[in-house]
Image (cartoon, rainbow, N blue to C red; front, side, top):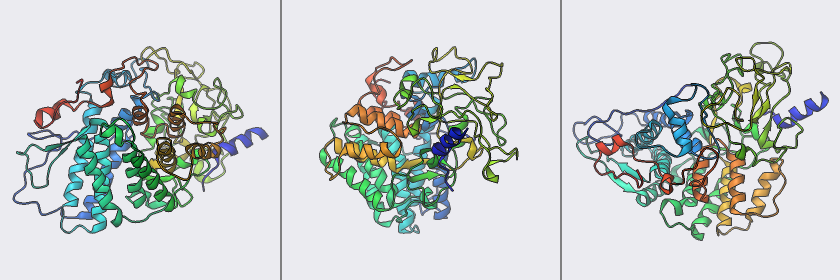
Length: 529
């Protein structure tokens, strides 16, 4: 059963990694290397097993705090990974992302390029297998479009190898518009043969709703991907139509913001459109302090990821405090003043009568943090564990600087499954943005945004600007792979924010990795690199 965390906690107080990456060995081809086969390609030997492997590969691309997640979130105004002493130095890989000074040798750039290009090729093999069923082909095309979507977004060009081409043939390269049209065709062709799956356990597989979501996301970003610079009303209407199709399959907003990210998934989870079955642990432990642990992870967090004061201030409520009753909207979360008495056996692994991890807050953790009995937590040297709003810089930090960000929660276990990839609130905000940009609908953009704000316990807006839409997406979708892309679409990504003053326009794309350029002469380095 889902717990209404925010309201139950307020009521009670009122009464009182696995990191997976794919470094593919490079030979004479692009980043996807395959052994030369003998004769013509005849198909994979077991389509269903290969499709399962493809889903597992997608999961591995998403679950780590590095690679895609780092490129989408740490390069934005939403997340920062400050170096604390020697912790999180890592030869500057995190700092260069935040400062927009990365180059073509950055390992997260290479890993992300390798990961999704590898998936494109593996899925092409499934699609070209004669024995594959229409549904298997449709699922593979949807996952191939998903993989291409990220390559298009991040790199602006996509190498493509046919299944009959051996390592001696350099893969052809699609430009951004060609790749966009290719992925769009994949999704359109897949739709009729995908299953119609509503909310529930099947959301870890491709469905019509997932294809509609990807189509909406593609059309929303079309003017960026194809370089026109201006959203066409007909494309925005396509966004509206695809989001409406998602709603027809039973997806909708749901109350209880943090319950969306709990491990259990059933028909009551009307928000979740696509998820993976593993990987939420990296979203928890990468941000929590070493002394914030659970019976399943007594070592505690990794004490890294934080947010900037400016991003925290986007949320409604007293900006200097975030405990229950301080006037905050639900999405900002709260810092509990003590733990909760266990209400179910599975929430009390150490059988101490208290709900595991319930002394750790939700959302944005700021100021003093508390132990299960309400006493003040300390850092490893005995200082009060006070998470500060301001950071001294990207270096020179102690264990306590920076507001921590937490959607997935240790109360649900040390390694909870259910990493949410796409959900309905994003679709609703895409629809609102599309209407705002000229799409046709019987609804208004302001009405849709206020529907969301009402269910999240936030005050309705009186009007709607571009900045309002970007801010609302930030408040709803933080740490969900969206922020960089949103900032690019709204024109703020090449601006400045704390500890980032580089305004180079070419940074809207990442470089083609140096090793990929060496191995495939058809690739051309992106401008500026």
